[in-house]
Image (cartoon, rainbow, N blue to C red; front, side):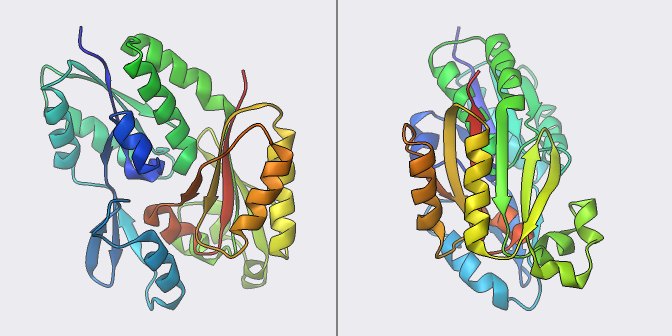
Length: 281
């Protein structure tokens, strides 16, 4: 029997070396800037994430984002149908995106291939850690049933915490209802957010980035023993400070550092910091 293959969308933020080593198929989402549409991809040749975040504060119109066309998922499935008869597609939270529907509709165009669509309930490396675990299990020869069970066991153990420099981009995006209700004065406060099981919660508000870093470290430490940890950022000079704090707090883990996808960055803005953690069983 051929190995199960794993598909995800580009909001998973999985480092390119892991994508290639684990043979993960990534379908890109799109960001629209000034009438131009750019695929979200870490590969060279496109709009770099560093360039995007440098330009974002000066853009006259906030960028918008979109899911890929159905045929892009269908094409990915068709390519994999040459290698396997079973695919698991793990995608960004359906509470925040219509990616789940697009991934499902794309599968309908590939008869003969069994495609399991999983709503991760997560974003960025919160989703990425599930995909990586699934891909590792697939390479080890586990069945689709066992991999799906593994993903479900990981879901409640994945936590994404973020400290945004401003709430303005999230408010404009309209993706989070409570953010729209914030008044202008509150936008000068830096919010601390958590993404867990498809919901975005505000955990608090702070006034300085130093305090934001301390809060992220405290939240991470309070999770207890961790299986996996990633440092997330939307390009900020304080990145190394957070890395240093986490190294002291979690000395047994060397977390990858991930520049967050432009798709999410358009909604959260530049100069943000975050962590994506998976707690131990």
